[in-house]
Length: 248
Image (cartoon, rainbow, N blue to C red; front, side, top):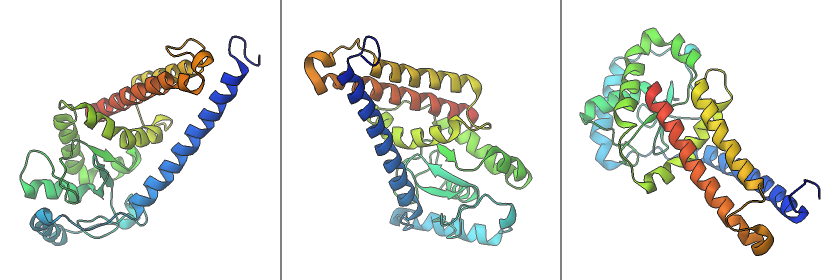
């Protein structure tokens, strides 16, 4: 035995599945990034009036300094039609300028934002800019940052169905992995909790003690491992959503 207590066949299959998971995850992230970069900027017809009013308001008050912005190349905001400045990603996966989506929310005059692209209710706003960028533009966009924070605190903790938790996993997990090992990302307490549960999932995956033993059921013995990992992924994404809600 390569590892005491673990059959060699289980070890090699586990190693193969780990590499497969990493490969599929990296492939998913590349595809997701490509889709984001090439996202359709067509506004939903029910949002056209509010978007037009938002554009007019932004054009009347435009004073952007692109040299100090966090604009991401090729990520065009569907509202102002310019390169996204201080980009924000909605819970449905669409990207807007922070100022644009807040102005749109004010003009639409509703408690929750209905995404201008797909009309889904936006449960939280995920920032794609760093803390340094936020501090650098605090004077100009301080009210926008405060509004984003209050929106997340007000709507991020709303009761959700199981399907909504599952739908949230890809977006939340992508942001989680981006922030997990960054020095200005997730706070220490949340980081410890998340790493602990990720280690639990990894150890359970390698453990010879299973509900459905691999030694008896072969590849079907991994079903309980995948189920546990899936549940932990949902829970970890919920922890991160709680962090986003508290951070505002």
